[in-house]
Image (tube, rainbow, N blue to C red):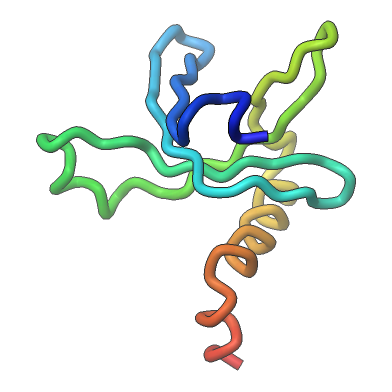
Length: 98
């Protein structure tokens, strides 16, 4: 699936027309829906603020036969998918916390 969006980086446009470049980390099937996790791509000037940038989670939706990326519908959905990605991306940290 990630091959459809290019080599690990994609550019998305928000509702206000602002463009953002994101680095694809992983794709996850969760409760019958496909989700993709990204980190914002940063330039050398922005690197010092990188700690403030968090994981971006988008879901893959079908619209007019085309796959698009959309934000999760609710905070509950976002939180559940976030937890699933954390278990997928950092399983050793989760095991050590128990």
